[in-house]
Length: 223
Length: 213
Image (cartoon, rainbow over all chains, first blue to last red; front, side):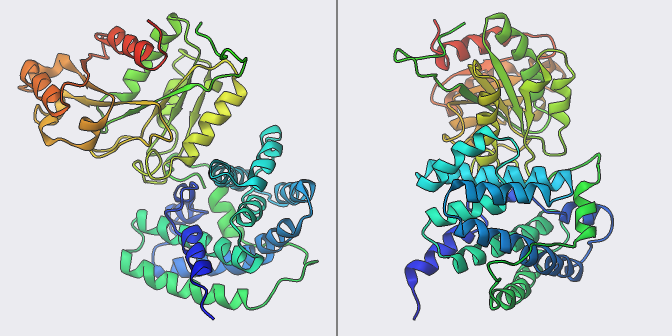
């Protein structure tokens, strides 16, 4: 049965205009374009697939689940620290923390009780605040269940990738919708298979990691 | 120094002042002039820049020697200079909160926007007060175009007044038009290259933002 209230919540939190700083993160799209490795919609589709299947589904999603199921703040903090140690790229770590802290800040200002509690921990620890841990806290405050939180997490990722590609002039607005349609299908397939609670997180996205980590004289995005 | 705590001993947040305006109008030059003037008046200061590309303006200010480089933060705008100060100022808010945490006595945070056009405005969730900087080199019809930046800012600054005779601009009618489209709200003239008009801007900030006489 169609639940309008739940669907509207997903639209709100999955909206690219949700004010949590997402527009400033290209997650490698800018670097790959600068290196000549992303010049078409096909390239973008390939990168989005890589992001979703080889990082988000195998790394972010299990961590999101752990943080979402955490019984207390220390459980979320443990996931946050895991994200810090399991992310080799300094630029990626920094980007993840900045994105997470922005999302957390908005939720705190909206009065989210868990977010407010977690913000107290994050403000004392410069290495905490990774996006995946914060998403769990914020989406719990928003009343989403884990499946919905996973959906929003995956969708905001691909929305950000495609939006960055449009702003960089790699693709146009119509092609962007085609890319999002494809991403939607990939994400739906991934979400159809639940991640076991004890799944060991892993990722392998070397091109993306290098693209984000390379020092560049000209850069418009945080990552 | 002004009071940083209220009567109950609770620390007051730093005032946040936005500085927006078109590319090349002199926003960074204005910040570079404001820093020593504000510091000279005993105001504890920090700066955030929103660079369109990389952290160019932030680096320029950090290397200027005018302020502790640690007090200058850069926020990337993701090719969206409007968005980062208006629709989604969350990254700037976090940067300002971070400066307040690292420098507990900070009283004033200047937030320089990336160069943009006449339509950019600052979110009231981000700033307590915002200035918009245009320059005479852009033409004397800029105020007449009634861009939201020109009309809605708390203080309009018309910079590069020294260029007026060289670009065929008469300052008096330009100033009159600016005041007209702003219904008489403040407009100040500056020449940041020579520091002219800066004291008036600092006085406006002291009076209208920091509530110092």
